[in-house]
Length: 147
Image (cartoon, rainbow, N blue to C red; front, top):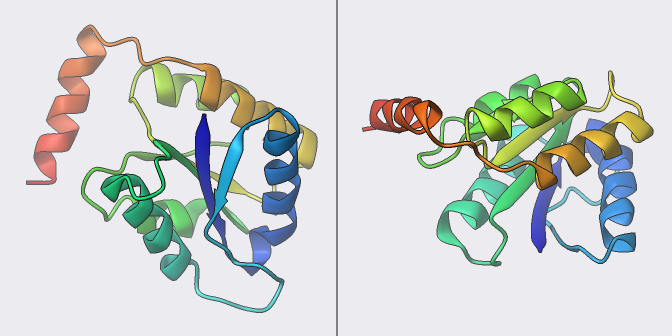
């Protein structure tokens, strides 16, 4: 499995924690930055990750975005055709965004989510399958909105 990640300065430390957690589990991580606490603009990093996921450039099929709240970076990601990014605050949301919405990206707010919870959320996001069925019709309707 290969996972792509990106963050702004507010999410840097949590990204590094999750990256290590995933690598310790043998999961390859494609890191699109940022690489320090120096101030950056989160839409730029969301765009980098979205480009990777939609193009298949790195082979990662899912992505994790992190900023201070998780809100701005998820809004930015959802502007990109083919991206379904869910802002998650707990493991149930991480589970349901995969089961019901076939989310291919998850956004986490580093200012609100501790490292243990974030790791559990990522684990749930990556291990939960899309249920399909009635949800597939709804995902198709969401995708149709993109045009």
